[in-house]
Image (tube, rainbow, N blue to C red):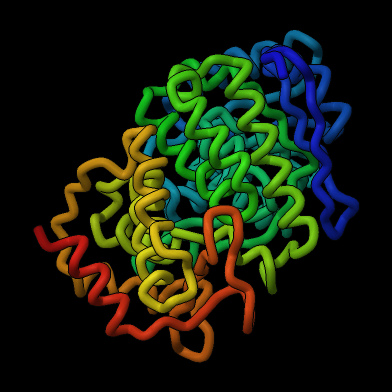
Length: 371
């Protein structure tokens, strides 16, 4: 695939589904695409302060230049902004601006923006249309696809939110060139996860293309975005509300989210999920479910992207272990884990998520956190 080849992946959803359009340079075509996918009297473009300076101001100027009514609403950059407080502030600002039900929210930015702006769209006037325009790799291949929106709370990540599918997802791989290498690596952790749960060949391709992906070369980056979106679209289309197989997309996230939260988000999402994948593979191996050597294969593959790297986790083991008990996958008061059979295949006997003895989780996490 060349970097400038337009691709559309269709996601099925309750209201008929939506397209994910992937094309280098597509941000320049927003004035054409937004009315086509989500016609509106007015567009509310929501970005964090960093992305607003890079893309938001230009996007709004282009929309206005084509005669469309558009306004830019910004919030402070960072995971701390994915909160009920920022949701409230943005909602009040839209009300003050008199955005009506004939308006559309455009989430322009990374995963935090997609989740936060999506939650605003899901709840504003009981729900208005949303278009996702992801600019980070995490957002392109994961957060923008699937309809999940929400905010973090003290008890953990993404525990307050709503399913609110977008009208469309517009992906420009050229935006990856503006990211810091560590941000690209963070997104690639999610790509590795997609290969680990469903596609061994894709997993191997990612490892082989590590240098070009970290350099954000358009061709390999577009190919990786496309394959990851195809994988996620196939999974979420069959289980929109995460009642069954969609749970496999949370592989590495039970402990990954716990590491993030216990570190007060000092550990980035990609690093935390990378660590979570390796730890959960070790748990699976100890249970005799995961093929021996899988955790080492994952560790070596993630190492090609500098992941998980050295994690500065000042929290205690008890702090990390407290968060899975608040995880969304918990059932009957017990935390649940996604376990691999091997790279490219998840264990599904008895369901997609599995109860694991707390003593084993403590032992594996303690061994990782203790020098």
